[in-house]
Structures are given as C-alpha cells and as structure tokens.
Image (cartoon, rainbow, N blue to C red; front, side):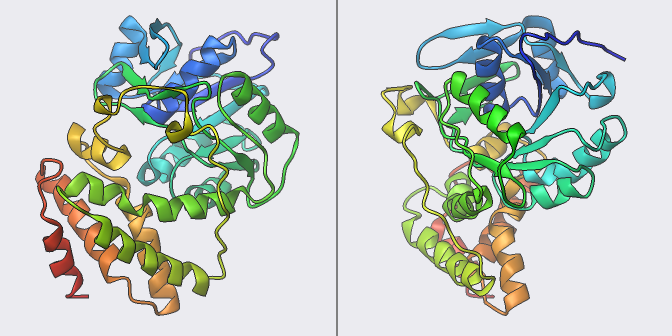
Length: 329
C-alpha cells in the first residue's frame, strides 16, 4: 500500500482517475495551484509519468510536473479528505467503480467529469456522494506521459452539481478550487441538464473520427433524432454559458496542434474501445424505450465499433457510407 501524506493546508486531496487529456489538464492545473493531487493512469502513460513526470503543455508554458501517480486504486490509502474525479471514458466506468469500491469508503465523493449521461447512475450504485460535471475543456492526449491543454485564462468550463440535482458544501469547495486553478466552474442545481445538452453536441465525435469531408448533414440528422428522443423522455436541455471555453479564450494554442476530439484521439491512438456506445448509443437506447427510430445514430455507433476493432485510420470513411447504412434501419 502507498500512503501519501495529506497536506492540511490544501484541505482536499484530489484523486484524478484517468490522467488523459481532460484528467491530465485538470490535475496539472490543480497541482500548480498548490492542491494535493494524485493521478491514476495505466500502461505506458503511467510508466512515463512515474519515471519522468507529466509533460503538460498549454498556451502559456511547457512544463514537466512531478505529480504523484499510481496505476490502480488498490495502491492508495484513502482519507476522509479525498475527492475522486472520474475522467475516464464512459465505457470504463463500471469496472472502475468495482475496483474503487473494494478500497474506498462508500461516502467518498465521486465527480463524474465525463461526457455522456450514464456515469452518474453507475457510480451511485456504489457510492453515496456522486456529482456531475459538464466538460468543456479542450485537450489532447496522444503520447505517453504528455497532455496538451489547448486554452488558458480560463482553461474551460467545468460547471457542476450534486447528482441527481442540488448543491452542497462539497461541490462548492470543488468549484472554488477549480476556479482558483484557472477554470470556470459554477455550482448549479441542474447540472445534469448541462450534460444532456453536451450529449447532443457530442453526437458528432465519432463522425469527426470516422469521416473525411463534410459531416454537417449527418450531424444535423443525428441531433434531430436526439431531440425527438429527449423530448419523449421529458429531458430538457439547458443552455450552456460558454464564457471561458476554448472558442472565446484569449490564450489558446493554434488549431494545428489539435487533430480532433476524444473519439478521434481514441481511434488515432489505436485504443481498444471508443465512447460512441455512450453518446450515439445513448440516443439509440432512448429511441428503443420510446419507440423512436434512430437510424443515423445507430449507423454511427455500429461503424465506430467496427473502426476500433478493425483498426481504421481516422478520416477515411466516406460520409455516404453512413448514409447508406442508416437506410437499413
């Protein structure tokens, strides 16, 4: 067991479970602000951080940060001051909750800082205090030991709330610490509404990864299917206050330094899985429940899975192939 001494001046130790593009950027900013931070990473990424530190690049500096890192939660001794940020892809959440539940107290706060809307309900099966967090942070993780954060001052929007709704002192503390670390983070009683809005935005993630050329028509169809499903489920979208996101930021890296979003990065890295089942697949799930056809989202989900399994290169699928497959459903 590894015991990392808690720094009482920092009040909280943030455990970042998933030190990729988002988790790495958040962990780096908190660490540089003086917070106690520990990363949980795996494979070559873990080994590189453990040996050399995390190479963290943002518009203002290129740093190597000696942030403590472990490869599994069983290596930690948890304390009452710990808060866990879940920054893995949604397809990994269920197994991680099982792993965490064997060593962490069920009262430990779990912050689902992830795309998709399924993670919070999974976490609530294991832990008492679950929080939802909107993720509007531009980041890239392609190489072991390296995270690129595309904007600064502020570094993105991380609005948050208690799940399924509400605000408490824990989420106020988290938002305050994130704000001090350079993000826009505001507690909101209906933070899950933000995440459903972001879900609709994220329906193009796999399209960006798969297709070369214009995807606007496909994206519009996928989002229209989603709006019908969300309406049938009585799930209301909430307008996002995007002040502080990458597009409106005064300090950001050139667009040439970012190849694509999270799904694009998964395919580019040759990952074993992709998050599409929890983005477009979420719309398919709602469609099945409410009897609403979702042919475009279904075709995107199927082809994204095929791309990962067969090792396709990014941007090589003609958009017309998705149109064609969608007509079969």
